[in-house]
Amino acid sequence: MPLLREVTIGRDKNCDIYLDQRCKYASSMHATIYYDGQQLMFRDSSSNGTLINNVNVRHRAVPITRGDTIMIAGQYPINWNQIDAFFPSARPAVVMPQPTPAPPPPPEVKPDTESWSWGAFALYPIWGFFNGCWWAFLVSFVSFTILPSILFGIFGRRQAWANGTWTSAADFNATQEKWDAWGLVMFIIGLVLSFVWVILVLAAL
Image (cartoon, rainbow, N blue to C red; front, side, top):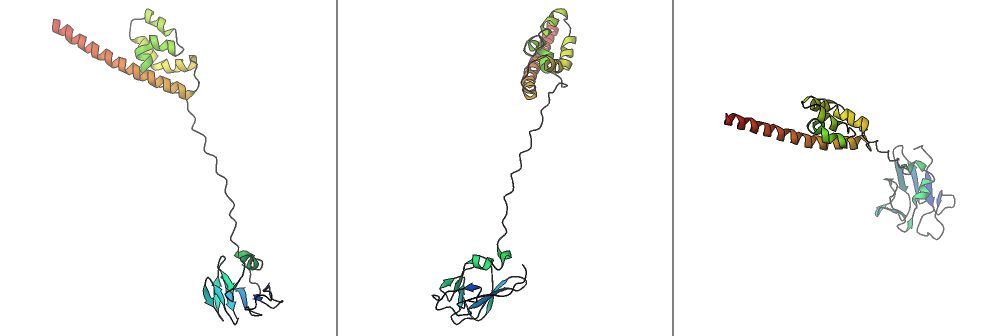
């Protein structure tokens, strides 16, 4: 805040902040406001004193800050807009609202075409109808080995993504996860049944 001359307050018409003649209890040169290099100061030099925040100040200087209540002779208020005209730096800084940053875009979802497909491994004849690989059903009539199951387990997701109609990569991944759950269940059931069959065969020998 730059150092300015003292701002005078009183009923004298030459005062910077003029109190008209109706303010009969105010002195002609009632008080001054000045900046001491660090803060605003109010110096009373009147007969009837000044109330600052309901504290009587008379013939002495006290620091003031914007928002303090200043009552000349305890009756006539000084508006801070009048003081701001001489000490503009005393006004509170206007903080401009900062724009709300846009939320980051959601992470891109890519189709998982490289993972092992339990659905295609254990259920490829049925799995193929629902995943754009209808010809998988025909393979079951050609080969009676486990080789097609292994190949579908390895390449099933890649074929399903290339041949199926998917609304999005997320839709594809979610669908394949469901098939994987069913395929794994069927694989485990198959292992259990095979184990039971072996036990029954050995018991019959």
